[in-house]
Amino acid sequence: MASRNRALIERDLEVLWHPTTQMKDHEWLPLVPIRRGEGVWLYDLDGNRYLDAISSWWVNLFGHAHPQINQRIREQLDNLEHVLLAGFTHEPVVELSEQLVEITPVSLTRCFYTDNGSSAVEVALKMSYHYWHNRGQAEKRRFITLSGSYHGETLGTLGVGDVALYKETYKPLLMEAITVPSPDCFQREPGQSWEDHSRAMFVHMDQALAEHAGETAAVIVEPLVQCATGMRMYHPVYLQLLREACDRHGVHLIADEIAVGFGRTGSLFACEQAGICADFLCLSKGLTAGYLPLAVVLTTDQVYEAFYDDYATLRAFMHSHSYTGNPLACSAALATLELFREQDVIGRNRELAEHMGDAVAHLAEHPHVGEIRQTGMILAIEMMQDPANRVPYPFQERRGIRVYQHALSREALLRPLGNVVYFMPPYVINEDQIDHLARVAEEGIEHATR
Ligand code: PMP
Image 1 (cartoon, protein in one colour):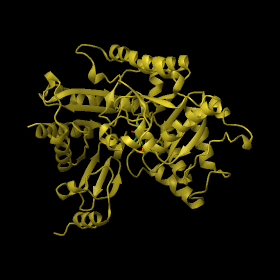
Image 2 (cartoon, helix red, strand yellow; image 1 turned 60 degrees about the vertical axis):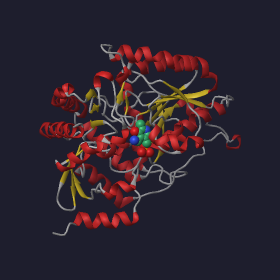
Image 3 (tube, protein in one colour; image 1 turned 60 degrees about the horizontal axis):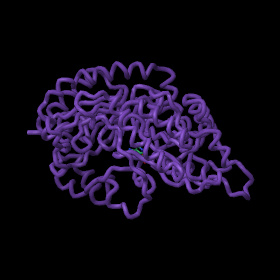
Image 4 (cartoon, helix red, strand yellow; image 1 turned 180 degrees about the vertical axis):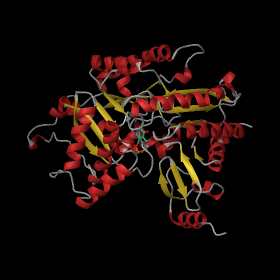
C-alpha cells in the first residue's frame, strides 16, 4: 500500500534542513509528517496518532486546534493580519499589553515585543546594558549566568547559555559570560534537601556578584527549571537570595520564563513561588498557547525612564523585528489569557501533576534510573548507566533515541534530552493518557537500558 507519509518524507528530504538535527540520521530515523492536530493528539498522513507529551517543544498549553483560540485568530484575520509597530499600533497589542501588565508583578509596567524567545532574551540583554550606558555606567557590560543554562541559539543568547552541544563550536564568536555553578538539585548530596542544596550553592553567585558587580549589567536565570540542559530543577529560595543580592550589588535580574511561564511549574509564573520580581521578564512559547511565534520582554518604569528623552540624545532603544507585536499572534495570546481566566488551569494542573508523579513513582527503583524529579507539570526521569556511582551513559550511545522510537510505536511523542526522559504535556491531557505515557516511558526505558 502506498504510504502518504513516505511520499512526503521523500519530498522533504530533497529540500529541507531541519532544526537541531544531524540530517544523516534520517537515513535510518524516519521523519514524522503531521497532517493535523486535535487536543493532545497529532495525526500523521497515514492515520497514525501520537500523544504530544512534550507540547511540541513546550509551546502548546491547551491542545492542538483549540476551538476558542482558532476562532479568535480567524476573527482577527478578517480585520488585520499585520501592521508595523513603529509609529502604528492596534487593538490586540494594546489589550494584550494591558493584560500582561495586570497578571505580572506590579513593578513590571512596560511590554516590548519580539517574535521568538531568543530575540526576547537578546532584547533583555541589550536593554539592561543600554540602561547602564544611558545612566553613565557603560562599564557594566557583562552578564552572569548559571552552568547548564539555556537562553536560545542566536550568538548573543549562546553567549549567556551553557549547553556545550549548542555552544562549543561557536565559542570563538561569542561574548564571554561569567558562569556560576547552578543550584541544580540533581547534584545534591544524598539526603540533602532541595532547599539546603540550592541555598548552599548560592555562595558561588554571591562571590561572583561581590567580585564582578561593577562590570556586570545583569544576572540571567531560568527560574526553577533549567529545561534544555535536561530539566534540572532547583528550589525557589535561590531566587529569593538572588533578588536580594542583585539589589544589594546594583545588578539587574533577567528572568527567562520562556519555557517555564504560563503554568508549567505549578504557578502562573515560576518567580511567584519565590515571591520575587525580575527587572526583565522574558515570555514566549505558552504566550500564544503554542499557536504563533510571539515573545515579550516586560520591564519596569525605572528602566523605561532611562531611555525616555529628546531624540537628539540618542538614548532610544533602537531595536526592531519585522513581525513585532503581530496582531494574529497577539489574538492567540488574548485567547490564551481568556482560557486562564475562564478555567482553574493552575488548580487542574496541580491534580494532573500529582497523577503524573504517582504514575511513574515506581520507576525510581529501576536499576538504570538515577532520579525522578518534578516541578509542577514538568516531570523528568534521568537514565543512568550506574546510578549508585553516578555514572551517566555516554552521549554517543544515544539511549534517548531508543525511547523516542519506542514511544512513536506506542502512539506517544517523547523526545528525551540526552538521557533524560520527560513529560511536559498540554494541560488538556487526562489521567488515562498520563497512565499510557507512564507505561510507554517505562517500556522505553527498559528497552533503552538493556
Ligand atoms: N529561553 C529558554 C529558557 C528556552 O527554553 C528557549 C527555547 N527552548 C529559548 C529561550 C529560546 O526560544 P526560541 O526557541 O523561541 O528562540
